[in-house]
Picture 1 (cartoon, chains in turn yellow, brown):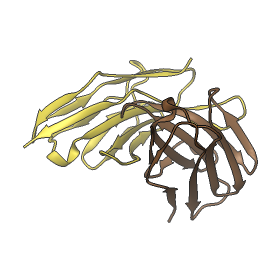
Picture 2: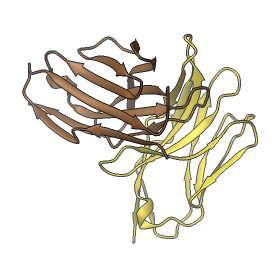
Picture 3: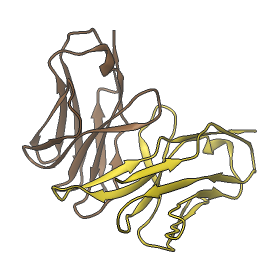
Picture 4: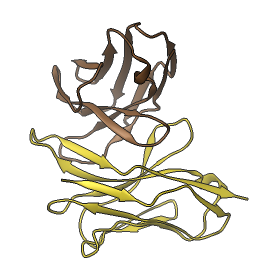
Amino acid sequence: GNSVTQMEGPVTLSEEAFLTINCTYTATGYPSLFWYVQYPGEGLQLLLKATKADDKGSNKGFEATYRKETTSFHLEKGSVQVSDSAVYFCALARLSQGGSEKLVFGKGTKLTVNP
Amino acid sequence: SQTIHQWPATLVQPVGSPLSLECTVEGTSNPNLYWYRQAAGRGLQLLFYSVGIGQISSEVPQNLSASRPQDRQFILSSKKLLLSDSGFYLCAWSVRVRYEQYFGPGTRLTVT
């Protein structure tokens, strides 16, 4: 079946450090891939997406590249800020039997950035 | 632009009481709608999804039900709450044939 595996957290970094959050997936075909971010007490926000192999999604300094060979979609940022502290979710999209679109989420990785 | 609303923002209810959470979407027509529950501040569990008025699919058997009385309104209900129903409930919408979902601000439910 379809599944997403994220690196276990929590991750604690100092401001301006380099961030990598690993995400690998299992799926039939070529699913669309997403990263969502959740700030404390809020809903999820779409951070970036990629719809086909070798696509690079980017937003707010974050990047992730769709790697079909390694079935991965790792999230990276060159210099994190305190305001990036949040929980990050990797997700893939699949069609259900009824034809509706659904997302399969990883368990989330909590990032804390210290000043 | 599209917006999604959920209310109430927080709710404390005793065990055995009924529940009604509401979600509305503005600025789009005929969206797919979803209810998720997030327990322990981490993973998301899809509870229900809907592709149209009156069309509800349940992902897991549970104490909850959902209804879609209007195109952009999605309601989550329970006749008798259990302690295990506590959690953060998120509503989301998506455009047909587009996979990305957009989430509301959530409702924090505590069952005492």
